[in-house]
Amino acid sequence: MKYTILVFLSLLAVACQTEPAADTEGSAAADSGADTHIQLSPQQIAQANITVGPPQSRNMAEYLSCSGQIDVPPKGRYAVHSPVMGFVGEVSHLPGEYVRKGTRLTSIRHPELIRLQRELLETAARIPYLEQEQARKARLVETDAASQKAYEAAKSELAVAEARRSGLRAELELIGIDTEQLEQSGKVQKSIGLYAPVSGYLNAIPAQPGQLVEPQQPLFTLIDNSHLHLELEVYARDLGKVQKGQMVQAQIPGQEGWMEGEVHLISPSVDLEKKTARVHVHLKESPRRLAVGTFMFAKIQVDSRAALSVPEAAVVRSGEQAYVFLSEDTGFRKLPVSLGQSDSGYWAVESEALSIESPIALSGAYYINGTE
Image (cartoon, rainbow, N blue to C red; front, top):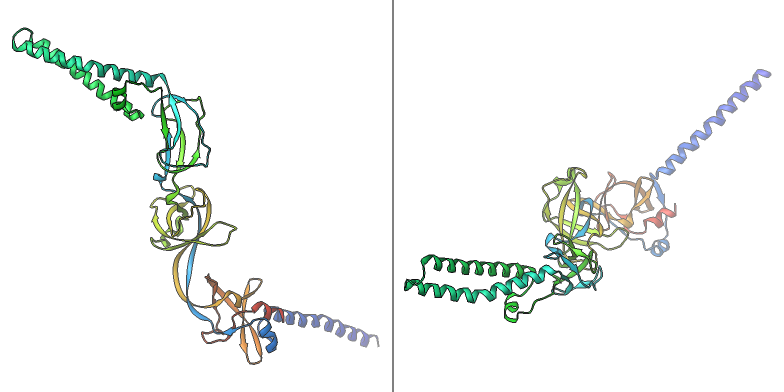
């Protein structure tokens, strides 16, 4: 009797252990989503705006993701220096302010400016006398009243004075002083003005009123943003995929909307530290409201191929697995698919059970999935 009871208890324990295993297999099959049939009434289909149609064969673009920033060409950056050592005058502009070409930015004053102008006026005043002296010596030489040496000395002295005047004129004109007006009026300028060389935005103003500056010190920097472009950094390993003329889409991270452009220039050199090369992109519309240095996320279209594709609204995900819903007479069947490229609101999909003629739910996939 005891033996019979022990055998019965052993069989009962084995049965208790095998039943959960069967349940686990059933749940795994349910979780996989394979061969899941979902029934919906015509009213439910209409209410959820579910549309049925076949997948499409579309040219799906392959994109290369990268990043960069808004920039201007070198000719769009200007530094304003003082041509001479001097003291900075009034500074009435602020960083970020837009100034037009020719706007007075500040003035520079220094005794050296006065000295150069004085020397020019003195030299210019002496030249008429030297010209007369040379002419007088020439007449005397003709009558043997003076030596040829005296004539040559007068001629040389005149040439030296003219060369000095020419040099002082060039130096003062380089500084920004109108020498012709100076010689006519005889009025010496105590300071010179510094003016904006182009129209643009003042990026930095290191100049301070009263500061003694040297010619090598930048006093203002301007940015002409009339030719903004996008400067991207592409990893060296991906550089072979990039070609001139390829389409580029760019956006500010966290914002909606894309700007379009195309690859204009590819740098032949690679930054050894970053392992990247610069790709110069011309934008179709100039982003005037963006500041130079704005960080941008971009993607370069490097390839395009035909693929079976469905709208994004036709795809649902469960973990790493994606599904579409195949329309059948009795409802919808949940069909696992492999996703490829995403482009313009469509996914490239692959499945042995899916063809160009397969009717699927093109929209409302999440509603169908929620009625399981």
